[in-house]
Length: 95
Image (tube, rainbow, N blue to C red):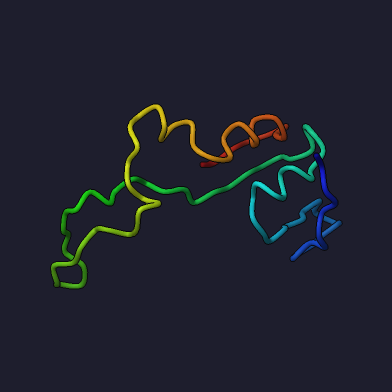
C-alpha cells in the first residue's frame, strides 16, 4: 500500500536532485517503481562482536548496539530495505 511522499528536505529542480528525510522503508513504499537514480545508505557493518579497539589512544568497546550484531551471512546480506531498493531503482545503489 503506497502512501504520499512528504515535502522534500532539499529540492534542486535545476540539477534534478531531491532529498527526503525519514524512515527509508516508509519513503520507498511511497516512491513510484524505477523512479530513483541513487540510494545511499549507512547500514550496520556487523562489527559488534564483543571485542575492543583503540580509539584516540584508549581501549574502547566495539559494541554499537544489538542492531549491529551479525545474524549470519544470509541474514546480513538480505537485510531490511534491500528488496525494496531493488524494485525502486533505475540507477545505482550504495548500501
